Amino acid sequence: MRVSALCIAIVLICSHVLPAQNEQKLSKKERKALRKQEQIEKNKAIVALLNSKKWVIEANTVFDRYNQSYQISPTINFVGVNDEQGAIQLGFDGLIGWNGVGGVTIDGKITKYEIKEGKEKSNPTINIRFQGRGMSSASINVTVNSSGQSTARVDGDFGERITFKGTIRSLEESIVYKGQSLF
Image 1 (cartoon, rainbow, N blue to C red):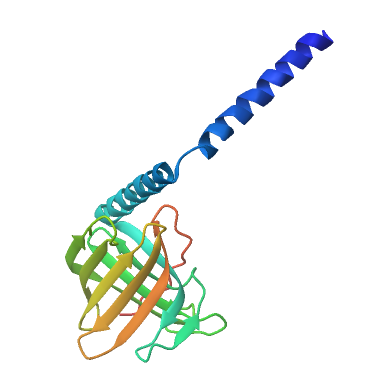
Image 2 (cartoon, rainbow, N blue to C red):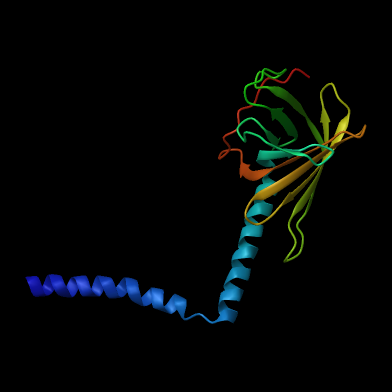
């Protein structure tokens, strides 16, 4: 009984150790090819998310037009797309704003949605034209890298500019809280 238990334990240990040794024996060229293939797969997943038009960039940093950065809460600061509708929300913890979460929420219609997938080493980008209620239109330029880190630059028609930087997620995975839009 003890001998058979010992044999089973040895087989289990060997089955875990041998594959690990094979992974370590990959040459530098093979590891590089493997990383490149993983990068391509991640980019395909990001492009599929962007094509679904159901995503949110949960921003943890915002930049003003003078490129000064501010750390913010990703649960109340975002740029989002849901089919033909878009939303931009900026809020600050501890304040009471127009939207009920310390800032402003702008909902609107997307009039242009153009994806540029990029090449092997470049990141996908999106050009969006956004028409919010009670405001003129704005251009939103989004860049997403393969790890999901995103930058959304919002340019208004009258020189306003704000940049959101954070993580892109699908609507189902998102943790954002949308305040009330007054516009």
